[in-house]
Length: 173
Image (cartoon, rainbow, N blue to C red; front, side, top):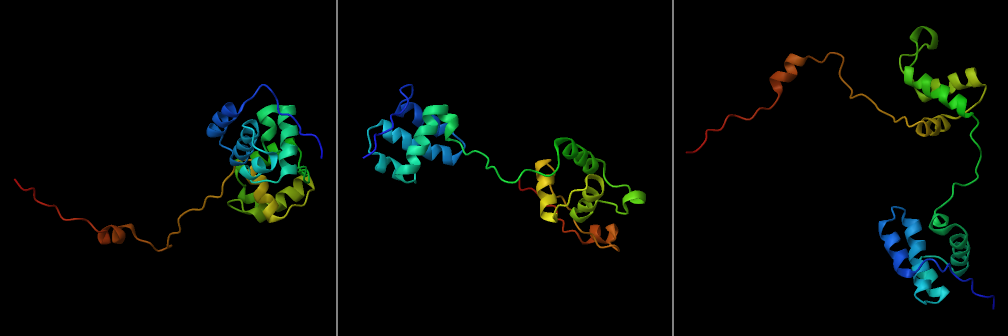
């Protein structure tokens, strides 16, 4: 049977539970509680069940905790495919979206994903899908906002006449 990996001596179960109580990340909280159970003397298999993981996964988290402390218990961003636009191009795209289209040049009055896809292909020679454009916009902190639809022949006077108003109630004395 392999040797048990010891936990850092500079932490204890009480401290980990206090940190877990204030932690906004639920995954990190589960890991902290599993490690607190280990500090309390629970077997590694039982402590892994507390954290909703298997014993080997707990062992991996113990290694990261020993090396990096509580910050090691957070999820790391996966390697994944790198973004095809550079940081400078992303900044320029943000400015393009912020300033809006020029109807004479771009042929549209507001940006749609398909229009931005065309602009990115023309300016940066990079091809994205419409869904990829959504991810880029989310990374730039842009949100989809749509206007409330209005009928073209809507008349404000007629709408005001049909609005429900409550009759004035007399006060009892």
